[in-house]
Amino acid sequence: MASTRAKIAVDAMGGDYAPNEIISGAIRAAAELDVDILLVGDAQHIESYLQQHHHSPKNLEIVPSEGVVSMEEEPLVALRRKPKASINVAMDLVKQKRADAVVSAGHSGAAMAAALLRLGRIKGIDRPAIGAVLPTLLAGKSVIVLDVGANVDCKPKYLEQFAIMGTVYSKFVMDVQNPKVGLLNIGEEPTKGNDLAIRTHELLEANQGIAFGGNAEGRDVLKGDFDVIVCDGFVGNILLKFAEAIGEVMLQILREELPQGIRGQIGTALLKPNLKRIKQRMDHAEHGGALLFGVDGVCIISHGSSQAPSIFNAIRLATEAIDHQVIERIRSYNKQSSFEKAEKLSVSNES
Image (cartoon, rainbow, N blue to C red; front, side, top):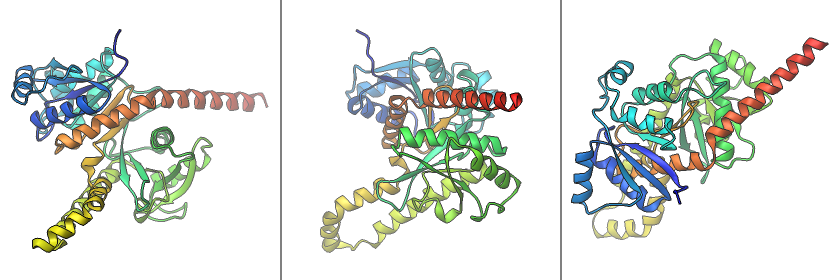
C-alpha cells in the first residue's frame, strides 16, 4: 500500500552550507518526522555523503538535478537558462503531485519565481507573501509577520490579502481561536502613516472576515498583543533581519556574561534547561524558515545561512502546513469571500 505520509522535496543545493548541511538536516527529518524526503540535487554527491555517514533511510529518495541558481544571478533569467536546476526540479515535483511541499535555503527570489512559474497563485491572491513566525514576550505565544520580503511595493488590497492568509495560518496552525490582526505603522491613530497605511487601514477595518485590532507600532510587534502583523515586504524584511540580529546579540550576551571557570560551569549546568528554552524562543534557526503564502503549493523559504537544525525545523514547518491544510483553507476562504461579495452586490443591484 502506498505511503500516506507527507512528501517533502528538499533543495539540497541551495544555501551557504549546501549540500552537506542540507543533507544532514534532511536525514534527521527522515529519522524523526513522519515524512518521506525527496532530496533534490547532485545525486553522486548525495549518495557519497549518505555512504560516508552510514545513512540510508528507506523514506529518503534522491532526485537528480543539474545546476543551482546562485545568489548573484537574476532569478528569472537563471531559472529559464537552467530548467534542471535543483529549485526547478523541486517545484516540478510538487506540480506533478510527487511531493506535497518544497523546502529551500537557496536564492529566495529564485524560489519565489519558480513557485509562481510552476505552481501559480491561489485564485483570489494577487501577490504572494513571505510569512515569518517570531517569538513574543508572552511565553508560548508567537506572532506571524507578512510580508517579510516578497513585495517591496504593495497596494492596499495586497495587504488585505496578507491579513486574510495570516489569519488562516494563525487560526489553524498556531491554534489561535480569533487571531488579532495589526497593521504595522508609525502610530496607533487611523490617520497616521503614508497613503498605503491609511488606505489599508480602511480596508482592514471594513473586512468582516478578520479581527482587525488597528495599527501596531514597532514596539508592539513582539509584545504579544497581536497574532498577525501585516506590512509591505520592504519594511517587513528590515523588521525580520533586525529581530534576528537582536536574538543573536542577546544569546551572545548571555554566553559572555555567564561566569567563567568552575563556578561558571556549575552555574551553566544548573541553568541548562532555562538556557535551552531561551535559545528555542530567540534563535531564528529554531523556526526553520518562512512560508511563502499565496502560491498554490506549500513552499518554505529558509535562511541562506541555514544549517542542519534549521533545515530539520523547515521540514517540520512544511509538514505542519500540509497537515493543517493551509493551502486548501486559503482557497476555501477566498471562495467563500467571493461568494459573499457577489451576494451583497446582487442584493445591492436589486434594491
